Length: 190
Image 1 (tube, rainbow, N blue to C red):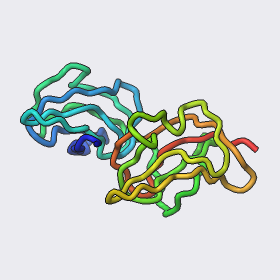
Image 2: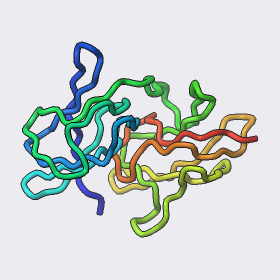
Image 3: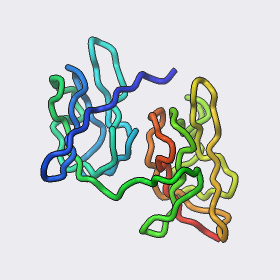
Image 4: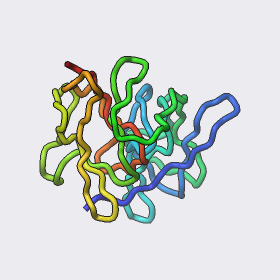
């Protein structure tokens, strides 16, 4: 059974930095490092509130530029900043589960709906895809669960491509995702 999730609070500073703040008095342990890129729904680490453990998620996309929490547990008050992000290019806004070409010539496979993203068919099974894996049209790359209904996410490349190589996995296993949120970046192959 997946752990309950908790989303960090977000505030945009006057200079454009995104401040991630603690959503409740908690002990926080962050698994991310400075320079890493996150998207909305990415797992940042864990929050412990009254002896209950939550997966701590990012509320937005950005590149981590500062951390006040690390791999060991640290206490934070409600609203206290534990990380800073620099914004990066906006996510896709049109509604489609098809891959999208980005500025680097790669394609994004996006979530078809809001739900919980799973990288594997069961907790003890290997992930559907890993970075560097070659995938073909129709291959399952993950699952999205909505109200205990699991829907496969299939790689559906645009015309002219039949396969690709997974270059980045943008959403963590068990992360809450939004419709049209990029999940994977794939370099297409003919």
